[in-house]
Image 1 (spheres, one colour):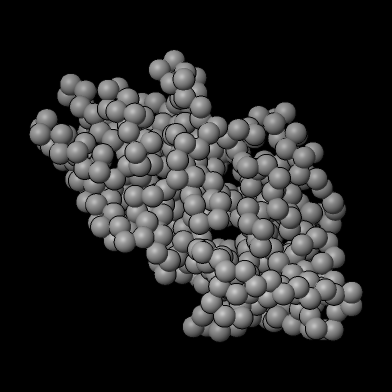
Image 2: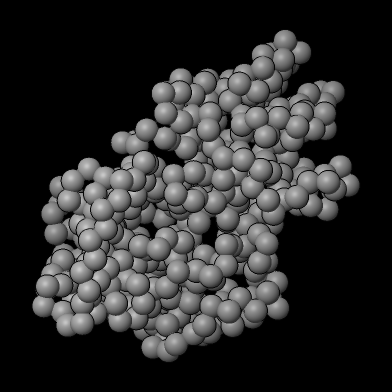
Length: 252
Length: 159
């Protein structure tokens, strides 16, 4: 079902000259113009011409583009995993929220960021002022009974294997490296090490010459199922040395 | 320089004490008698629109050369020399490397990191570092850091 067929939609024409559109356009390109507003509404932003965009809001269905996320050349379950995404509430809670995503996906349950934050604080695994250390990333999942392994020097093949085996992956990246590709004038340089955690929910090899990495990024408003070129993701991931946490159900 | 950064990041104390939300800033070198101390600061960022807000570095990892031994990982919030610093604030935005200055900035950063890496290698190979070399490194550092980091880095160089 395409977005045009959704019921209860509003069409908004927003004609607004933006002064600095480069970062917005990059975000738009990566999210394919789609943004989940809440559990039942989705916004599609289309570029009409330079500096002018049109927003269409519809009730949640399956925008045509999302159908392409179901094929055997995509490892993982991005469509299902995208349903668990939400924007992180705390500035420093990315790793906690990624664990929330993973736990919900593997345990088929509903969790709450605030509850997990309080729990992690009580265990000394999270500080609201500073966040989660590499060493402690995955502790919540282990506590919940999942099989967890850290890999300090992971590869894309390691991620794919985990996803194909029914596991889930959290990766350490530099989020500014993801937001500021070389095409942008403003380059934040250098991103020497990682500063953020994301969940990798799919590797799309539908076009072998244009491999895509699909993420649930809790730090971006359009972070649900956001996709990057493999090279862009690898650059951001290299800042952590390829740090990844794999999680599986213990009855795998 | 990448190899030295990798070695620091793999230290167990760094993995267990420095949160992944903090990224490494420009390292500095201090000569302490026969040893060269490399101080690796860690700060956090916040992106708003097209602006990258930067905090004062709250964490430090200090490695001594030629041994490559990690001698300290510290949360500076609890260091009396930094009592007046608000580590929760973002005192400025990234500006040095924006727009028409981006290419020149990138070259200056690479030059600085190459120089730091070369000095670490020189000391690791048991060769002495001259005061002149340290001075040149520091000059280049102040050309690339954001203005709101000046006081912080001056403090680092006094350690």
